[in-house]
Length: 240
Image (cartoon, rainbow, N blue to C red; front, top):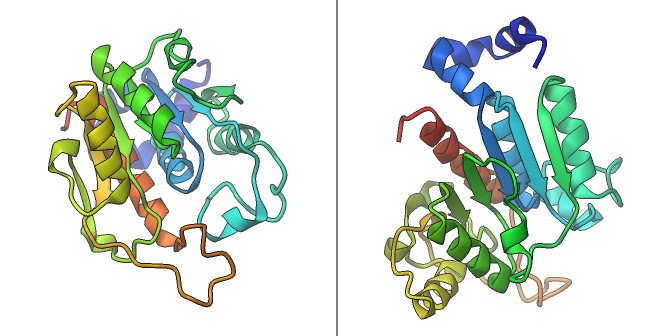
């Protein structure tokens, strides 16, 4: 980056809290964000606004109008656009000095090993597909790449039920339950940090337009994504 003075002015409030040296650590860090939906979008926002120097975003989807109730990248002007394109534009508008790489691909069990061909300091897993999520977690765990995995935010109401723990200690979250089972089949029992909501899930109302899709509220995915980003940032500056 060739405008360090502007960088440290832009993130001066962060420097006041964590100090100049730790801000420099964020500047030289590389974070991957897998998934830019309701959870991943807010994680992305916090990572960029923390001053991370290099960010990789991975997502295959485009913005849909139904995303507008909970996804920070979704607005009337971005409907129909690839989420990675929206994210790149937003990141560069927040911090013109950021180095951002977009990967407009769908993560699958078959391509996980090809995702991390460059240096990586931390990965935030915010994808929903179970098979791909398990494959990604298994790869990160096996290769000792620091990460946090985001569980399900749908059908949750209580923001105070948010918890970060090893997945072996998670309760109530339906997605975490499935992921735990799949990981056990791969003989992974612990060592998987995750963020989840410790509450029983609500059911869609009987008068809902589409009973097959899980309902969600504006604040819950955001809270989860921001918490995941906080965990990542604390790891990067050595405050875990």
